[in-house]
Image 1 (cartoon, helix red, strand yellow):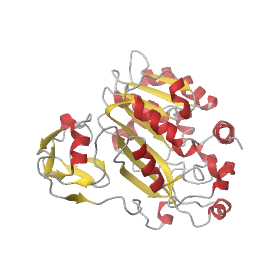
Image 2: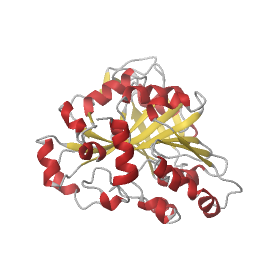
Image 3: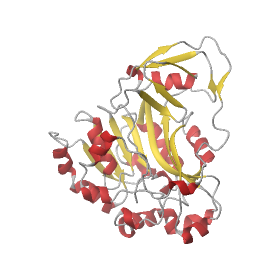
Image 4: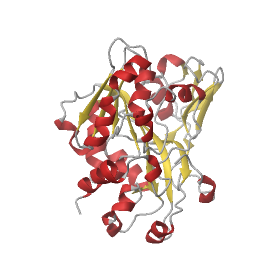
Length: 350
């Protein structure tokens, strides 16, 4: 089976709307903030109907950013991000499915008018994610790269992560949602077009993903949100056996020299409350919810993630690495996802 051609067929022909999905893997059930809900109300209905994401890939502080959307599909996230970055920012979407891109391009002027821009701040490119180097994208030119339930569909995931690392500016981030398994899956499941198209049999074992991310230069992957997936189609569940699946959003920052563990140097930060729509607290990841105005002790990696990224103007920084106090915290030795009953996640938007 040619996986790439099967995916193009599944998303270009088999799926005509989110109602055609057989599982909730490619559905977003995250709680959507009110300001994003308002913007989604301005996205064209046809673009909305061809949405197959599994998370919310709208990080904070995007004003003026250049963003790359990998696997942009019909453009829902790209247009949402286009509204967030403002007229001085720009969003580039890449997808390999012609039918999906046709939908995105057809409504470019509609969204320019919705956002009252003088000209579109979007571009859509046809190409495969393993071959980003062929699209003429300038290295170190993007502030943020996003992707929504796409990496699991790509056979050569390492090639994509390496390309993303090259395309990001220093201090830039890959902020993306995808599906992960609690174990390594049998190779023959990848030949099942439904399981693969539904974002399940191409999912990485979570620890293999973390090791791959580190090997590609993202030393300290940070889990932001996660949820267990419900597979209610009995036929598909029987094929998968006891494997469990999770939708998760990760934040990967391009910073050289991060430490392998969370080391304590007595450093701290204070959030100024100046990021729009996050005035009371800033969520860096699942373990770092930083209240505004409060001194917040952090490890050296977190200190650098905030100080050497677009978030720096929104923080005060205290301390240095002159004195080491040992390990700060140990995350990552066990499954990082919430493993409460999977049934609790059923009833999603799809």
